Image (cartoon, rainbow, N blue to C red; front, side, top):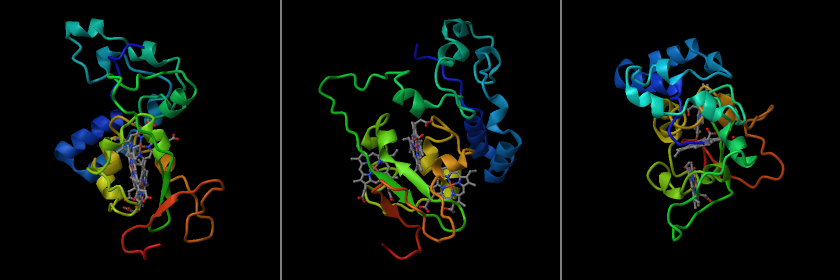
Length: 210
Ligand code: HEC
Ligand code: HEC
Ligand code: HEC
């Protein structure tokens, strides 16, 4: 696969527009009007994706997304590839480092983020993130390296901060609520931790420490 062409995510584009001038309410409204599934299974040609300049002669040297991405595990949102699955199945083998001396750091640790109100709790998996990203992408700029150390909120995420720095921009879009809010709480106020998991529990601000 050549590296040059990711069709930009339509929701990400909206989010940038919204951040620039329209505000959060309009973003949410637009996101609701344009469900990501409208694009399911198809990639717009670069010519009319609304991102590339159709008059540019440079377009010819870029690979079309449909050609580059069609063999990978499909998704119905974002750029229509389920990247985590694609990597796990070995469909792609990204180069981990440019220099032999670079240390590749990985961590298998889930953080369950309990949420006030009725939404299912959020599971943040370190493993799937550190397959792609070094620790320094998040620690300690975006998040404290301590469970409960950061005040995370959906409002900030929708404004492109915290998880929203990547989700909706380069990783799956924020319209996929249950991909993050994946831990149900049937009948109880605490999330139900799936068997076999030994996660750290992050409580929302204002709730007593565990
Ligand atoms: C995509 C972002 C991201 C990446 C990359 C990442 N982390 Fe984290 N990490 C988090 C978040 C979010 C938390 C929870 C913060 C909170 O609860 O406020 C966390 C928490 C932690 C904690 C606290 C666990 C505890 O016991 O309290 C440690 C330690 C940690 N990370 C180490 C690492 C290391 C080492 C790496 C690289 C191998 C790494 N992290 C990569 C986002 C990330
Ligand atoms: C520095 C970039 C970055 C940040 C910040 C980030 N993520 Fe991710 N996340 C990724 C990438 C890249 C992937 C893999 C590609 C994809 O699934 O779109 C991913 C995948 C995931 C997955 C899918 C795991 C799977 O098994 O399919 C979950 C869940 C997730 N992120 C939750 C979160 C949550 C919750 C936060 C905030 C606490 C967060 N992420 C912050 C980049 C990031
Ligand atoms: C990329 C991951 C991710 C996605 C996608 C996501 N959320 Fe969240 N959400 C979070 C995190 C992280 C928190 C904060 C957890 C905490 O309190 O520490 C949160 C918190 C919340 C809260 C609690 C109130 C607040 O502001 O903290 C609500 C309600 C919520 N999300 C609704 C949604 C809805 C509805 C969607 C889909 C439109 C969605 N979320 C999509 C990660 C995500």
